[in-house]
Image (cartoon, rainbow, N blue to C red; front, side):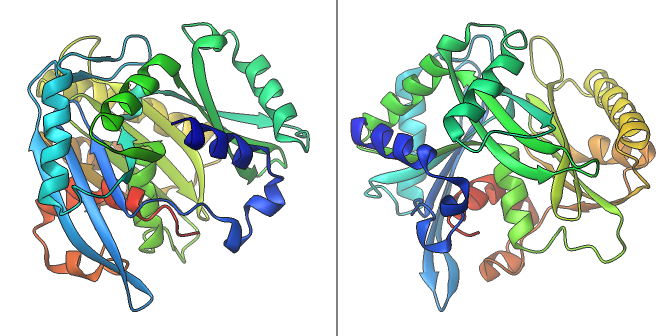
Length: 340
């Protein structure tokens, strides 16, 4: 783990221009593991003819309380059961000897901010200090206990620099890394599931829209839902929310929460982001009945609703059952992280 931390620290200190060079991109693992509160999913890819082939995958259910995702009190309630599930999905995927994996966690494991700045310092260390200053009153624990990462989104329509920032509890990340190390695994990358879903769809061309209108993404699991809006290939809005303070999806009661959030989001989108309409909503709903969520998304005016799918970047999935594809997408997008 010490070597991994040293390499990550070295990488973060590189100038942004150098970091974007193709030959400098990190060699992330081709094995992606998604841990949700209700399941663990693994995907193993191999390179083939200039592209990728799905070499194996695995899915294992988790009992309630095995893993709890929260920015305030994340916990591993049953370490042995969680480790057994991770081991099981890796064996199913033929990746039990992978050595290195990347890890996707629920969006609620971290708090994500989209911050804008008139200008940013050129040195990453200075950017980090500016970000910490902006966030010091916005997270429910001291920054000294946080693991913080950020990604430059470019300049917005108003010319201001946009940063995507994620903050999580360091001790929670260390606990998960330790659990995987106990299985003989090193973690190449830790990410949030909906951003990996976004990556899979992006690489498959889902956001290549000729009309000039915006595209949206809805991801829902039994414990939380996330909503994104993409304009011209650039993320302009993101929100993740639990259905309730405690407990999982509860049918109509939870749908009322989703409706309220979608209406609030679309109002903000029109008034503050100058939105002219969403053309397509790509929906990924797993672990719960999708009909209700897709129905309220249509009623809210989220455009033409389609099941999230990947047909080009990994051709084998074009003929796979749609329910299976939806389960695999975040882990797949994670395994494809080495792509630009």
